[in-house]
Image (cartoon, rainbow, N blue to C red; front, side, top):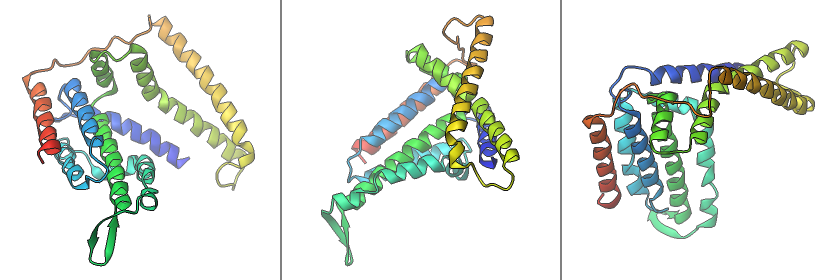
Length: 256
């Protein structure tokens, strides 16, 4: 139950961080989105043994985290589950690829070891870049940027609704677990026999809530799309931000 409360609190804090007054937060959302996408594409394009080259891409994250006054500690805390999953992806590589690349003293470094670290680092960089975008850009601004790129309105609408109403779902789960704990005092967690019942109840409650939300949207004139507007227009500095970072990333990728 405490974890659910912490998750709700973290989502509220991330919204507040995205609305802070700062240089990175004040940039137009479209350049930030384009830079993030280009960074992720460039990062994943590195070869499986090119660990040294991949490490150079960390320059973007270091400078951006400093300029945006973003806490790395909070990144690790909030995204620890995702980061752990990403790091598990390449854990089997050392057992598959046993070709020796070089020696450190008597210790043989195999291709599997290098490729595993490279794959993990790619995932960590992608998660960190996505988190950076989330905590410096409000979800409405992100939706606006996606529509400017002609992303289908259905996708943008679903993204915004999921982000906005995930808190409602978490509060519903918290309410159900509180009710269960009051009926089962002294018990730690949920007994496996009630897992199916709890999931079924959550599905029914979610459907009821979804219908209420949809009816409210229709009464307010919803016609299948959120008409989003950005608070500021993109200026020369915003496009210069993209141009500089794209140039730096290309240099690091092909000349570094």
